[in-house]
Image (cartoon, rainbow, N blue to C red; front, side, top):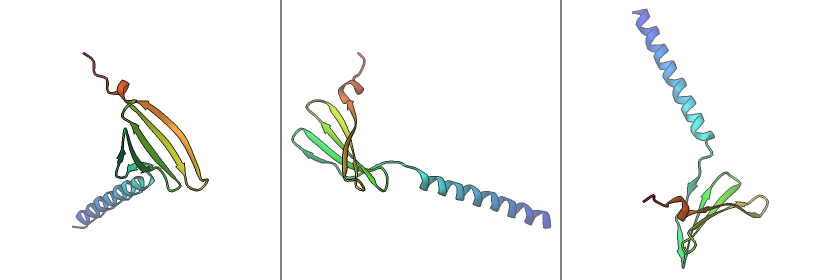
Length: 95
């Protein structure tokens, strides 16, 4: 009877530890999340949170087939280009 309780307590402790580690790792993640896109003319724009101080502005130029990413640092009032991706090249299919 005492062994069964000890095993049950050990299993519950291990489960609680695994859940606590998973919860901590979820909050340490710097996963980006995007907002609702806005389209106008040949451009589609969407913002995404990168961290508490930095947002990312994604701009898709449909005519040129480019995706541009800009970092918006609210603490320093800066707007910096980060990356440009050629979408036509990225999504080109082999024939």
